[in-house]
Amino acid sequence: MRWWKVVVGVAVVVTASWFFLPRNDRPLNQREHMFHSHDWCVETSIKGQPFLRVWDELDKVVSACEKWAHFNIAAFTALGDANGTKYHLLPSNVQDPLHESIVLSIGIGLHITHEQSLKKLCPTCKFVGIDPIRNDNQEVYSKIGVFYPFFLSDAVVQVPLSEDKENGTTQVYIGGTIVEFVTFIKRFIKSNTIDQIFLDANYQLLKYFLSDGALNAANIVVCQINFNANQPDIDELMTFINFVIKLLGERRYALFRVFNIDGGAGRTVVFINFDSSFCIDKYMLHKGSLVVP
Image 1 (tube, helix red, strand yellow):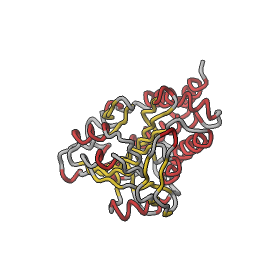
Image 2 (cartoon, one colour):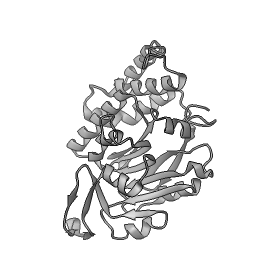
Image 3 (tube, helix red, strand yellow):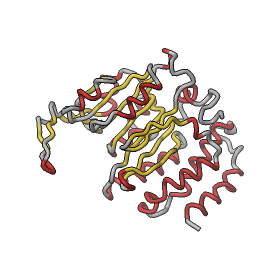
Image 4 (cartoon, helix red, strand yellow):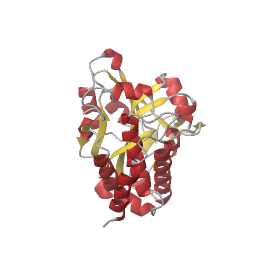
């Protein structure tokens, strides 16, 4: 029997015993119990395991924990194309102007099929694309939203115009501006709530989503994240898995819908914020939602 099956089986027995454990001096409600149990199931299954084993088995672990916690996985809307599938939870009424949603695409790479699919389903969504390579990305993304030729980072740096001639191709970084993540949100988004982030292999931004990260310090709420881990090297792999373990331990985000991309060399992972009242009210209380079948 595979190691993750054994651990998930143990999680079923142990977690059932702490349904009424207090959180902030009160018992968990049913919704909180589902998410806490799911996080604990995944965390316990991967913590202490070799990183390469976690990488290989993460999709199976998460799938097993999803089924055990009885989430309504059908609530996820699949946005698929030849480059893989992303998932999004829709609000109860996507036509309601009060449900205007902000979607950030961090790293575009000339691909906006997922965003186009979401725009058809959510006409009130406001799309913002960020990519340091302006060539063609601006023209492509401007069809659905606003484009910024920046690289989002954890530092504020100005770099000169440069060219990347690796692999025989030339990509011009016009402006060459590296913008700190929170600074970008405050200056250009001007909102404390972000509904969805499509984040493409920018590992240095992962720490922003932790409870001690700069987003939380700035009172900025992110409800959903689709993160693409594209063929990570060993340092990126360690950053990613350490982040996942710490995030799960905080019991603020839940990990869903892990699937392989790039022929198994990459992963797309979905994180859902179940700690924010804004996210809960908008995405989890209506019939057909993740926790209300």
